[in-house]
Image 1 (spheres, one colour):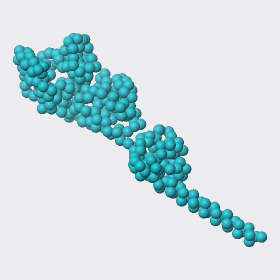
Image 2 (cartoon, one colour):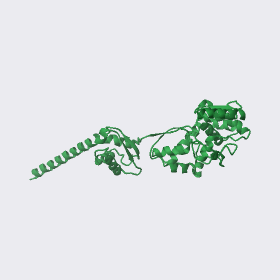
Image 3 (tube, helix red, strand yellow):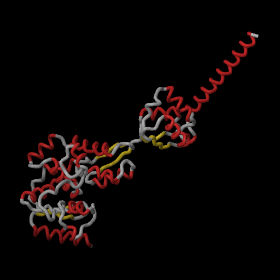
Amino acid sequence: MLHWEIMQLRLVIGLVVLLSMGAVVGVAHEVLTPAAKLDSGPLLVEIPAHDGVLDIASRLYAAGVIRSRVGFVVLAVARGTSRQLKAGEYDLARGASTLDVLSQIEAGRVKQHLVLHPEGATLTELARVLETERLAASGAVTRLATDRAFLATLGIDGPSLEGYLFPDTYQLVRGMTTEEILTRMVQRLRAKVGPDLAARAQARGLTVHQLLTLASIIEREAVERDEMRTISAVFWNRLKINMPLQADPTVQYATGKERRALTRADLAMDHPFNTYRRPGLPPGPIASPGLAAIEAALDPAPVKYLYFVAMDDHRHYFSASLGEHNAAVARYRLARAR
């Protein structure tokens, strides 16, 4: 009788071992074989913050990027990473297995969004781009950019972040806060406009804020980079004699018309940024100036010009007298009207 019981026990143990081995083989197959959807192409999956391993497994399974929720959870537990999975947006490659998917989430290799903030772009234009990329709400960007408390944390003594967001290409990830995005762009400016440029601005009687303000107007007026120093000279010459800058981009900024044509009513409006009505620099920058415009603001060309008018979509004609300027305006506006 005892012998028979031992034989039964051995049989049960053998069956358990076989079943266990089968389960292990089954799980191994599930985690090493790509899901059908990933077998045919890459997929984008977003893991929200605070999701646990079970929620993540369910989300991945629903998206069709893993073959088994159990297999994903077992693998994460076995690797000791079930509590260390990182939220974010993941671009999962074609042919990725559950092990590959888990490794990517463990490492936090999230999708990078390349966001271009070009020279001369405004805060409003940046806000639209960030919203289009689903990185931040446009309204949240504009509100935070004028928040006095936030500006104080960045050491900015101005009405907004306009002009302080360095024009560059940024690698951003979904899930970053609006504060993190804008802070990174301000830090990029600080890295570019260091103590040397600040000292040169001071030597010219400008604060960094005033330097960025002047540079932003030069940036928006100039099309060809080799004209920047000459345009800078015109503005410096006007500032020295307290003559209004009469820069159209400042009025476009005041009216919210961005790059559209202005009317006589626009030019006559009473606004701190209307440099037709008020002499001197406006209260702050009107766009993000690049390094070339900042350098031009610090190093104007040695010329006596006080006026310029567009000859075409790229270049300007410069004059030292009002008579010469009026003649140039008549000549080039007639030519452009033909």
